[in-house]
Length: 407
Image 1 (cartoon, one colour):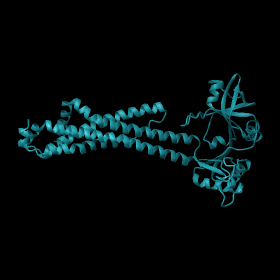
Image 2: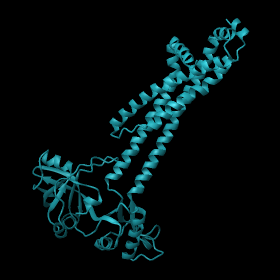
Image 3: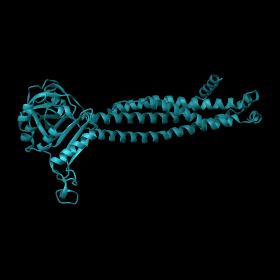
Image 4: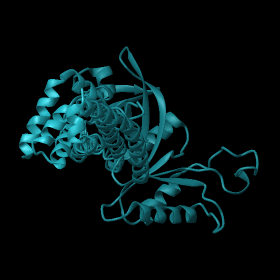
């Protein structure tokens, strides 16, 4: 019985192919928009998480903050000046902090790097051998700094892929001398490429050198811009952040009621916050796109009412020869559901195609969700049932005598 009803529904759809296509077009557009928006949003969220993860796993970043006391808001002209980090803070964390996998001090400056007749503006970072571990960065070739090179401020450096391409093409840079600002620097290693961040920053346009050498030759001071702390896998970053704050407050002699003159950024929390914001925006876009599904459902109701009117005599004949109301009801419900499902399937294919094209154009992961696809199929079928019920009920309740008289 049900298969015969589906066959009649499909025959009715084929009989009015153009009208059927225009009817399901609203469902196609709605489902395609929802699938595309949610898939692109999922890819964007994955991209954000990957970009944050490239900075380092379980990473905390200590940075200078606003001055406590009279330097605070409204407290004097020193607002905006920050109390720098130095070796005493780094030494205190290195000796007293527990639960850290790696601790690294770093300072950074944009300078001109020269090799032969070529030059390039590069982000030069002065740091130590623990930097690679803290930032989850590996070497494609060569070796990291030794403890002696770090301590003595030797003229050695590691370069990123962008710097290598500019100066050496596909060649091996190991052992070559480049000039960083006005100082000669021997290349001892090549960093594994990391690509661009979501904000368009080239992470491979970088040169790493020992912090002491950077402070002497580039910065001209002994300040530290950031201290990177990577937590052990068994330690929560929130717990480690509290330990860091307690140590630094003690070292910098901040009174119990005083405000911190430093900051600690938890990259895990930042990743979660950005991912949550991205997911919220995706949900809003998906909801807006879902409005077109409602419009498509109204279109199905409209066309099914027309179909009932056109086929009044057919309904009357079927009722006269013994068909029950439920048979007429099921026939038109199935017809509306088949229309909606066809639109849903076409919409899914179109939505995935659009999402794939957008993922390629935006360089984000293509992350389709089986749950979203199944939900779209179910929702499109539900729309067909809900919006097809009233026309089907109207057809089923026709009086056979009046239906047979209908012209």
